[in-house]
Length: 474
Image (tube, rainbow, N blue to C red):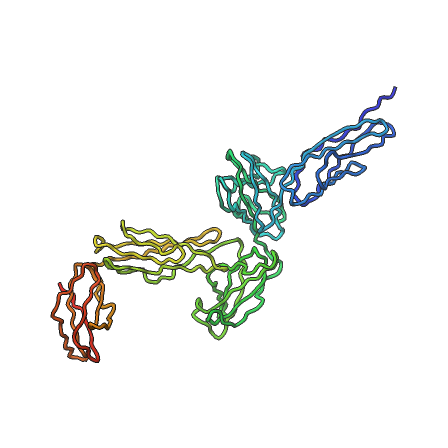
């Protein structure tokens, strides 16, 4: 007697595929029944999944469904024997990180979300950035498939971080392999979901040498100079170099790192630099330029503009100094200032964190002391760079008095000046400064003030010229 048996489907392991790619799985059944006719169907298949008459499954994914996990279930039926079999397997669809395009996601408590990174064959470096996280997370690197965090070639790039970046190149551990694939995982060690965003940017080598497209002599904001323009991938950075002569050749870098100034396309954006001659002592009869491609994403620190660092401040007198810096990177970055000091109770302040203007009014108890004012400036680049300078401010008991205003009124000429409440003055006058000068002292002195603002009115008859001078009494 002949016994009919159902067909047998193979065991299909779980599959992993980046969103936007096509998965093909051979799910062909075997059947020992004579003359078997097999029909394959998918049960509630995900969009884009089909199966043909030979049991070949094709699953065309799209980027907008990633990340997700779908179950593909197949039923094969032997129509002659009216027997069937079923199997199922999971498909994990990973999002692919596109260079320069941030990916926002939410990681479940205790979970990890993986992203596939396809390294271009001409990549020189990859910057893996956690842009933000609502709670601290870990950023993992894996080349295993499916990706893991406990096997060889698994590395923790960031630990317990709210933001940060990790650069891979040919010398780092892990090493960057052009043309390969690796996976980034955002691990949530918290008991609540975490919203975060990650981004990968590549520094690419070009098969052709980058060249300056145009050099135009022009005037920008009232300054004459040369505007240089060139085109390159948006994730490249350059130093611009110059030399006054080619023999002997001695190239010098302009300050700062130049990134693209106008995004046109990921592979071809506009870079510009305006050379106003300020870094080179003006312009000579000849000038040559060339580009230097940087090997990894970078940022340079700001530079303070002050050349004087020693100052004198006076008791009860406003001291102010503009301690601003310049960032040479292109495009320009935002600068933030903060200050500390060596004297308690200095009562100074930065007017706004974006100006670097420091104001301070020393008190009487600080007379004869020295205040070391330390300014820290930070830029908005990635990674952030800082610079520091120190101003040495000696506090003097009083400033040399001088008349600040002279106003003609109906009563006469009113003189006004600033001092301290402990000071006393006489005022003298003359009509001619040609030697020998004949100074005459007004008799109604000494002049005092309870506020530090001194006033004196000359009620004598006015003459064509009259000069006044203060005498600080001992």
